[in-house]
Length: 418
Image (cartoon, rainbow, N blue to C red; front, top):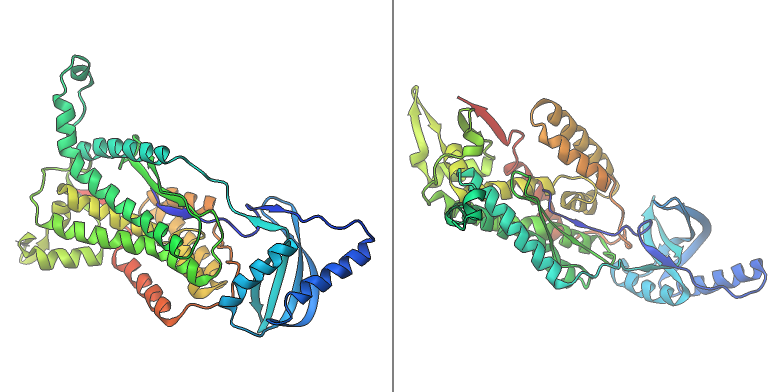
């Protein structure tokens, strides 16, 4: 259900093609290679020291690296693309790092190859159509409309029309939010000239929403933190804006009746209302505040659960929160790394521990999302240029997004009672 973009790691998943070496003595060849590599740095980097390292990769192999330690003589942002071009001709992939005030150019032997993911457009369209069908069926089930398979076999399609009428508002709203989320990633990536796939929607008829969300794959590396930030944050913010608009529209539409999946045999359904959504509801729909026992009790949660468009928007907010979790290669993980660097690893570990605790005590479904986060990896890989910092505008947006996370999140999405 989490909509996340999948980023290639700079070391491990990529396919390196090794440049051939001339047939001469190993020592002479090494010296000649070092001179050529150092010469490519003369106008942009002052070398203090040189080290040779074997960098382990996720596949278990060792990548040979040459590390030039020193000081950059030019701004890192325009310098890194220049180094990429120069060292591609020499058969190496450069990485820019900074540690304890020392700049480093790390040269990985081999050329980083883009991911070979070339799906036909019809596959993306087919997955979208299947997801519309499964999400519509799920949306209809919320309203108690189900397909009558026996009647359909006899040629009676009345139940099909009932399902489409009941489920389409929920399904189309939710999938529009997911689609805008992924296209936010897509256009941000293309703006940074990063190769990216179209969204893959994931139909799943046995799941509450009829879908596990959508995902895009970024096939070529993101060069620096600015690009990583823009691509990572654009999806959640774009999806949030659409979900917010849909939520406000839904507040002024009539409810469709009882939400059967939540109401069945349990009592009054309640969904956890985030601070932002509760506040908007109380301001825009004060008539939902009911006097009870001398105080006003909001029935907003009951209304939202029964209004298909508002309910889809509520789920859109929940999915946005899950994507903004500051873990690994989730969107929130990208944002945290660009803001805090290596400290993002500590934040990810703390978040993962909190998810496990809340999953065991309050919201068991969080254990599923914790498992997904663990599979994608808790540690975020650095971009090729890990020196170029975020500008103040991006930092402000990043910090505002952290605040947004707490405004639209709730630790108890679902509760039941009589």
